[in-house]
Image (cartoon, rainbow, N blue to C red; front, side, top):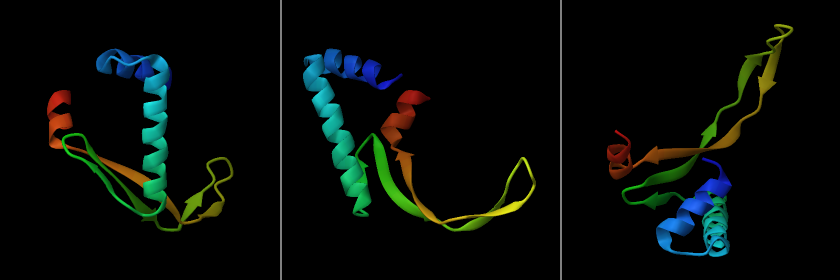
Length: 90
């Protein structure tokens, strides 16, 4: 499912116009990104939680040349599905 299909699904499920559903989705994405950037954790009961963790610097290998390269540390977003979401999938 891509973004346009998700907007269509939200609009039909919530009885909103596509424009309102797009605004709601964009608002959710922006609010989530801002909170994660500040280091906050976002928990949506039944759905799951978003958090940020730091991936340590490490040494990798260029697959074409076999030469070692240094990969810098970086922050990565983690998502852990809630019990209700996991139950609906299984």
